[in-house]
Image (cartoon, rainbow, N blue to C red; front, side):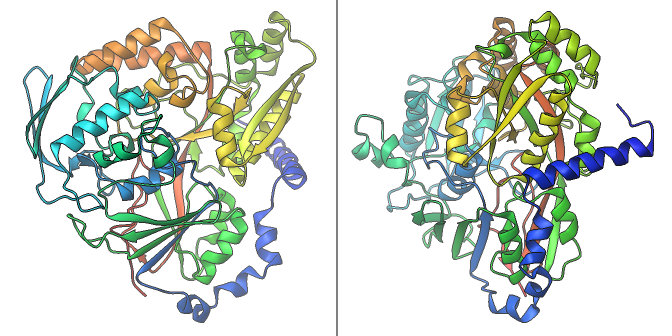
Length: 542
């Protein structure tokens, strides 16, 4: 809904400003209070320059390091560096490229994949990466039965593998799976050293891999002080292209204003693109020694509603909430115009995107009528969970709180540390959550399987705990078909169904922006892996 006058727009900005002062951190004031302009002294910045050390700041700690038991982007960012996969994604490309598999053959029926592995790859303990390790890794993913199993368990099983020789393996699918090669570039497909069996215990080594790694990647885990710093060192015997950075420090900085000052001083080389608000990014543009890298991405910001029980189990309540949100105001005041509205779980620009899925208009009268029909016309109180130190989410939550108040719904905002937040929403202890999502491979199967398939509830990142047998069937059919037209139709139908049932409210598809020191070279934002940082290819040049 467009504003009809400049006065109404100005009034909205006054409201948002008052709310932000009441409940949000004001980053610009924090920066001024610590003499931010003086912190950019070039001499001070140069003193902190080290061409062999890369310092990355994020405010979200890492829950654990097991590739098969975690679906957090903070985990993925580091294990992508510690492990290798059969294929990978390079630079800004969304096409899979050879990695451990230097080539592969696919049968005409799309059922058999024969991978030819590089012969000189070694795990960090010096043992060779073999076809046996590939088989071990995928069967363990299935046995663990968590996030990774959501991709592979319906496609392969323990009988799917034939080891032809040490460096050749054939994988026979249980049924055709159109995005199979694309899935092999995900963190879930990291190849783990079979020596992990020595530490299996009662949980297939999950406890061991929670804080350790057994990969063959360009970096080795050196140390991890939770909540402070995770340090990776370059693998001196890496089989592939030599890592450019000798040391990578993942530094956990709780306050965005602090990270900004550290960047200006040269103590930090790059700040997590999810950490700094659009407003502060705008302020940073033009600052001496700093650049803001921008890209169109596949990230979507959304609000999962736990629909298994309580008031949100009623679709009319969910539809009422969808009609209560002033989306235009949200995009303009929170994202400052650097985002667009999205209709569903498939981002604009990806195959299968449905431009015709229902968009809920900002209509307070309609919202009130739906709440009345649901018997929730008065006194409805809900809680929205957000992760700490994210100004976009905190400002979004404040605007949602203000909007819902207009239809008689009280929305309490609760802020949690990232690991606690993740546990809360994956265990179904939330009413609402505010989350960002980026796909690991560029196919609707990835987004929709996690958002909508009943097998992905909770830890599989179906945070709405949504279940619809017809949607399950459409997803399973699309997975097994090589008919692109059928797949596209299925995905569009799923998006249309979800738009009616509203398990999620899709807030925005933002432009991706990341602040970086000007001396950093080779940093690129991948449209689907916007949180991925190619530390092994980045250089620093004064």
